[in-house]
Amino acid sequence: MSTRSQLRFIQRSETANEQSETDRIAQVYRHSDGYPDSVLCDLVQLKELLDEDSK
Image 1 (tube, rainbow, N blue to C red):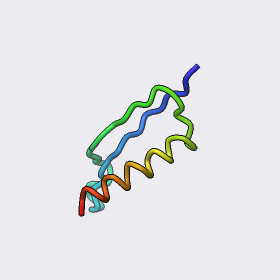
Image 2: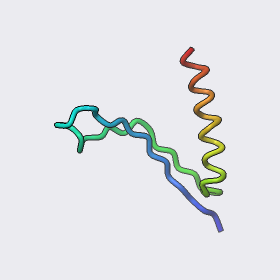
Image 3: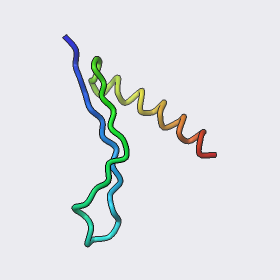
Image 4: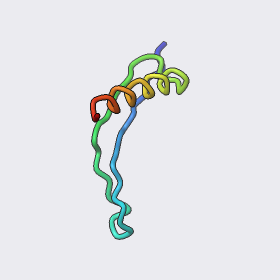
């Protein structure tokens, strides 16, 4: 049996008037090994790649 997970990346507005509005930037579905221990390691790698790309 697989442990599925969904990760949703959103950008929240900074202004108080628009606190309820969110904009979805990306959503990732993971079919197996969706436990935090595994997912967090992959998120760290993703952040490192995105940081390299933004330089």
